[in-house]
Image (cartoon, rainbow, N blue to C red):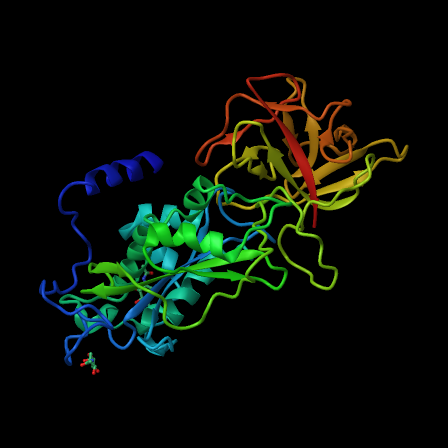
Length: 406
Ligand SMILES: *[C@@H]1O[C@H](CO)[C@@H](O)[C@H](O)[C@H]1NC(C)=O
Ligand SMILES: *[C@@H]1O[C@H](CO)[C@@H](O)[C@H](O)[C@H]1NC(C)=O
């Protein structure tokens, strides 16, 4: 699938890429949305009233979602020209089968979404439905009447394809990193410096939002469109509407996965809790095992069979640690079964492993250990959907596994 999608990208780089399904093509001289000076009636080619379109991005750290070195997609929203907005515009056109629609018609878009359009509760389909049903139904050029041979789902394909395509032109992580604004548990940044970097790329102000802990978590890029949402030209503009919510100074930009949002005792989350510092020795209870390597910016995590998975998407498995009777080590198990280090030194969690064969593990205060060592190994860095076998005997790639209690 990956190579098929890369090939598709290469082909699409040609002069004109066929867009399926084809909506009405628009005259070249249509006015730009929100910038018309006379009334323009054809709302298939001129988005009205939602002519100010926002591509919004998330930086989720608690729980973390997506690759550690990329922002993720929140949505594509049609705001009115004055910053107000409509939502849920067509109850009869709400969809609850986004994945099923995209699978046959836009598999590469779907694959990309599975990595970069992530729900922090782990239910991506539900999140995509929410975004389309709330916002996509309010885009005038996506209405059924704009499609000559409309069938349900055509506008869904266009909405997701166009959002992904636009998101790919906005590599916020790289832009900020090139300017030295990188995720950190200790550094803080000012609104002006973040704003200056983003403005230099987008050409206009970008709305930057923070949560109540001053942590940067959202970016909103604003556009007007010449033509339709699906195939028109997106023209960056100054935002009209809600202002940035980040403070002027002291903004935190936390790393994903690896680390500490200081635990907020009053809130409970369903996702990974921050890695907390724990005393060395015994682990007990449920947690996630995240992987750290010296070479890969995104280490990934261990999945239920005891394999290492690095793709941005996916969900770490819950491991249950149980101290042994002697109180000097603990065993691990997952939904697949108890975990053991096999004779070839590979890790396996499986129903075929008897409880008595579950291997003893330790914890050095930061990392999982086996036989006194926190080093685990793999033959190469797993990429794409590959699952790396984890060894305790040296192989080409060395890594460590942190414990994130849940
Ligand atoms: C722009 O077009 C919309 C939709 O036709 C219309 O309601 C609005 O009055 C127009 N704006 C101007 C300045 O003519
Ligand atoms: C998705 O759901 C709609 C109804 O909301 C239906 O018309 C369409 O056939 C479904 N598409 C797929 C691919 O399941």
